[in-house]
Image (tube, rainbow, N blue to C red; front, side, top):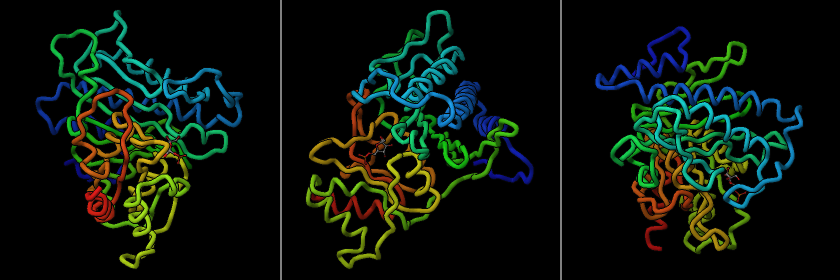
Length: 337
Ligand code: P6P
């Protein structure tokens, strides 16, 4: 555990190296992946910051695999990450919310022993109205032998197998939060020098929180026990005090606020999305890793998110994530379903 013993400025690059030193057997490949992701985050931040000024808004005219119309920034962010990550020699494949299949590492580049899964710009439908959006990433060690291109088997691993995970929130400031299993650490971008600086070492989320983030417009489409659960969080059954509802419709922004302030984000299954809306591999798993490292918990209503054995690259999952005591109520009240 690297304590923030520094009173001076610590850049993300330096912190990553210091964490690497905790593992004498480390080759530096994972550090390289994280440093390249920090570069990609700075590049995306520069685009997002100008979204209102440059004619980047509006439909790109293509649709992604989810059948959603793509904002140009979705495509640009996806391309930025692919181009920042494909030649470092540490990855054998990537997967993105914006692309149907596996993204191979081009033949001309060396391949490594990791795979990267990411949502390049989650919540992008909010860009036009200047609501914070985010990038989410997950890193796994390849499980297939040899040094060929990574395969689906390398991607379809349970979340507890992640070796690193993180997110970037492009909000009032740009922050990158990551974990390699030694705590969750937050870095704030100082755009005047183009550096992510350590601002939130070893984040711990409150045991019980004040914020409830859920889209209650779906109440009529929830199972009855979910309806009862949300009533409990809202203090309507007299069993606990009411939580403050905060829902901005941008997963990374809602998650980040609750991680720091305490609370619960819920995207239950509903009649329209019978397996939930959020994507297991590159949304639910990485944020669950971060949340557990900060002392929180993430479940699908029946089991720990990180224990789910994936079967499809873009599979969805019901999602309850946040302060441990708040998620425990969900585990208890949904277990019977
Ligand atoms: P709803 C954005 O489209 C997103 O994927 C997440 O960022 C966000 O939490 C969720 O969907 C919002 O979904 O159905 O409440 O609009």
